[in-house]
Amino acid sequence: MNSTLLTKTRKITGWTLIIISTILMFISIFIATSGQLLKGGGIYVASQLTWYPGLALLGPEIVQKSKELWNNFIQRIKNGFTQK
Image (cartoon, rainbow, N blue to C red; front, top):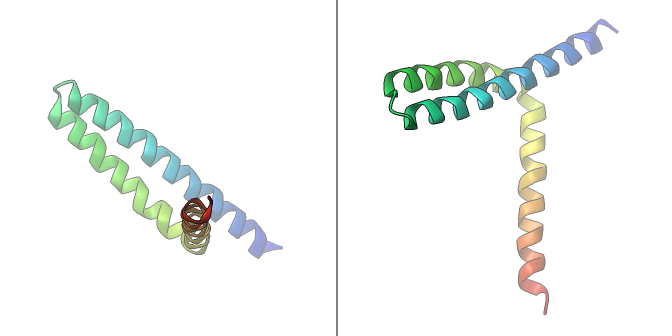
């Protein structure tokens, strides 16, 4: 039971860090395009500092999700070329 609690906590923390990182990345792009390059660059660095720990925490889950997305993408391409 303790193992499942740790797994759930790890997944929630990992996904939270990934979501925060994605939000920070878009904010940094917006700020950088408004002319404040130094501030935008600093926020982008913060997004990277949350991205990689999130990936590390998700480990096997992110690999599995990536494989599913890739296989779905390949299947759509194959179906698109074989349909008449």
